[in-house]
Length: 260
Image 1 (spheres, rainbow, N blue to C red):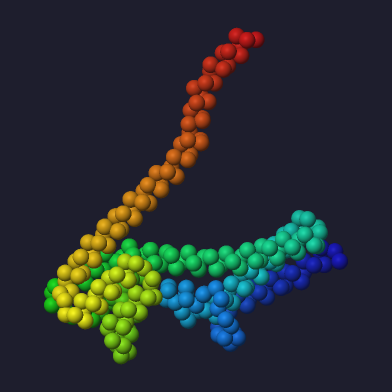
Image 2: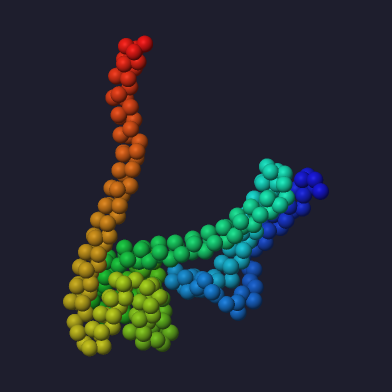
């Protein structure tokens, strides 16, 4: 079979996959009972997308199929050999499948980092609200309604759980388990302990706000140190050799003239 005869069905297949990808209402019931060995459900729940498991799996599969056909079409025209083209297209499809999975892991890390960066400001606002005489639930409700960001969304989840009938400390504990951050986990444990024992909450919040600021400052210093090391790479391997070359080139030219 000639290559030109393969192009038409491949193009129609790609068009059908793109149309299938555009349908947002696609759901497969088998995915709900399929064992999640890569913990995709848990990672989606950590970023507030626990109801998108089926659509995530479908999009992951469709993207890998699209990459397979595009790679197959390109390599078939380039190499004009069926077996190497098929093997390389399969490898690219598998790589695209795992790439989407790795992107989800990166999204979880970015979400956790965003929560930790927003944590000191939210805690300071919570401290001011409690100092003004509000209860912890009302203060957290006010902050969740007037704030924006990942941590504000998590606080809204806590408030919705409380309104649904869950105890406040249980909703807070679910927040600590869901985010999986050391800073959030320590804050939640300290806040729950203070509420159950009747300890002053303002002192606990002020201490954790100062600790969160210190952790954020140390994190910035660590990133600055890594950036300084990465900035040395172009200086050592690019700018310095060019400077030495410009300094030595006239001398080498004159020596070649004298030698000639």
